[in-house]
Image (cartoon, rainbow, N blue to C red):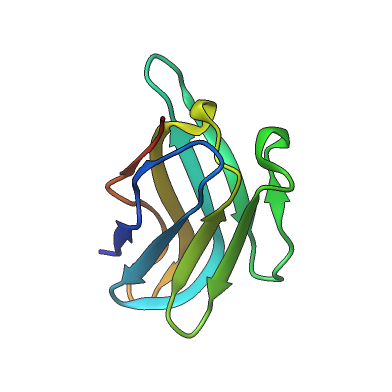
Length: 120
């Protein structure tokens, strides 16, 4: 079993910044892709940013230029730096990690979600 623990959400004013963190633990042999998704009230879950093993990054058009995804391979962690936050960024943010476990093969795990609220 691979467990993901997220932190860093909260309430911030428009234009402010937050940094989300997600750490994976368990019997992990390797990690392929890491990503952040979000789900706003009444909407489906959408991909915000992803970073595969080669370190390239992909972003939703709505967050390009404002959000930055990064990963720490040694720590099995992924981060999302969010700047110039807007009210429409309000959502529950989830991290997602795909990889391989030492004994049980491929895994695809989700974090518990962390609330981000952008409001004045």
